[in-house]
Image 1 (cartoon, rainbow, N blue to C red):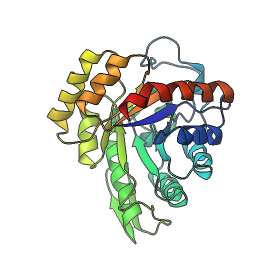
Image 2 (image 1 turned 120 degrees about the horizontal axis):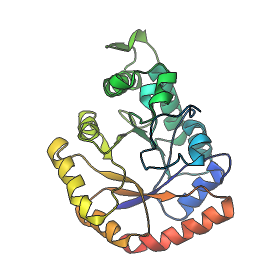
Image 3 (image 1 turned 90 degrees about the vertical axis):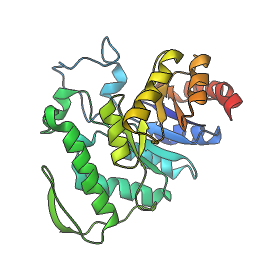
Image 4 (image 1 turned 180 degrees about the vertical axis):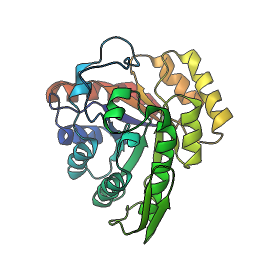
Length: 276
């Protein structure tokens, strides 16, 4: 079982290059960063975790800019989007960003995607929330064509292009691994459909790990599971994930200044050492 780090990288916390260097130096295999293009001030969608929307949601760097900074100071660290909101992104431009980062980093991109929960945000991008699942699947299909074909052609319900030439191609062949966020059966199925990895958010108590894995077995049998945003204080939960055979636990790291963040990373090393 591998361990990665997820953090909301913002203009008020540690810089993404300093964070990435610290994560790699301490032996974690990956760094995942989130995405929200903006937060509409007239908020209607409830925060999934309950309560007020935390400050860092308003201040995130663009994930591909942050991960490029991370790539420039590391050599082995996997660079993950956790998650890119592809249903509100242009697929041609996003394919270019992913391929460019993968090419420059030597094949270290993990492309995490999700349908999103903030309905106002996606509407501002012209996305109908009712069709975001179909849209996400189609955009992934279109991007795979752009990554792999010399001349890509795609005609779907939402996306159309003829004889498109898109370079650079990703360094990893046929393309970077696709990690699908979300805890629903739809997300698990989507991961299987795209030959990727299911990346559900962490459950709260160990007793629910079995139900999570049963959902995978029913709707995406054989699909690897990488659990996202796991708290480090519940040792029984970490044990349950280890026993369930998940491929990675991505630990949640709070958004803090550099010195405090690196100290917290040192503490996380002690937590995971017994599983390495």
